[in-house]
Image 1 (cartoon, rainbow, N blue to C red):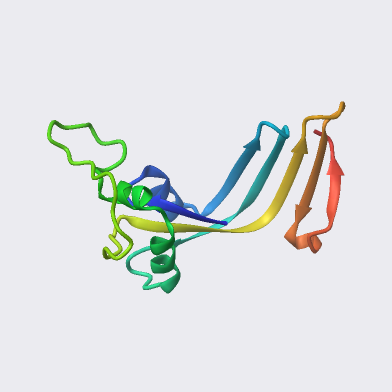
Image 2 (image 1 turned 60 degrees about the horizontal axis):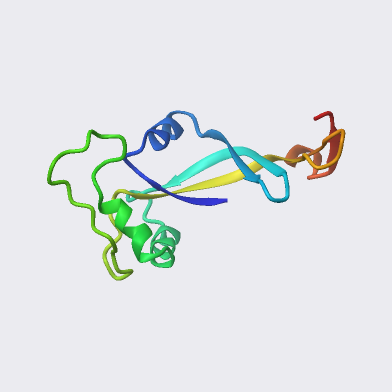
Amino acid sequence: VWVASDARSGKNEQLRQNPHAELVVWLPTSRLQFRVQGEIRLLDAKSGDDERAKLWREVSDTARALFFWPAPGAPRAEGDAYPPAVPADRAVPDTFEVLVLSPDQVERLDLKPQPHVRRRWRRRDGWHGVNVNP
């Protein structure tokens, strides 16, 4: 799982200290929840990774602009600049980082049936799925 993230955000600093994370995706219409646990690898300006530059070109102009806004969570100041769009040919800023989650465990929770159905897959088990209690 690849996620674009601002280098100045608290989560990026936390992941540098402890790369273990869990991503939760909730699909309300289908009443499904997915949980993906694993280790995060950060692709930053120092990594020199071509994948980071490739993703930079693939995100929208408005998404690229966010990385030129003031730091997330910082107090808002009069006169702060918030560009509405940034073209793909602009150099990748140091603030643009990519979080790459390599899954060790995946769970799906289906809330439609009663009782709910929860299934878990683990890498160490060869990705064999097993139903567990919700």
